[in-house]
Image (cartoon, rainbow, N blue to C red):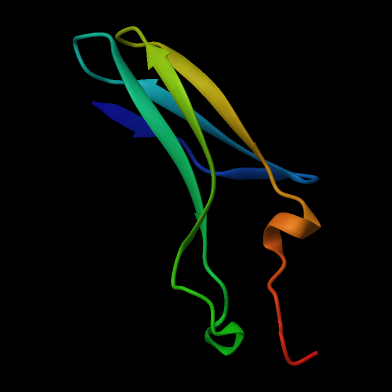
Length: 79
């Protein structure tokens, strides 16, 4: 079992703590999804990053995701 802390933004980075709250060691895939406003006509959720972390019971690790203008941009064929 894994528990996630709050998502924090710092510049172009998103940080989140992942904690193993189970009794056994294990691997978790932390994933960052973003959503766009309905007017953008984009899919409801888009995967923007993921990290695989191996944690011992009780261990906490902070994962970071980089968000750039390119990763947040959308393509408009009518412009």
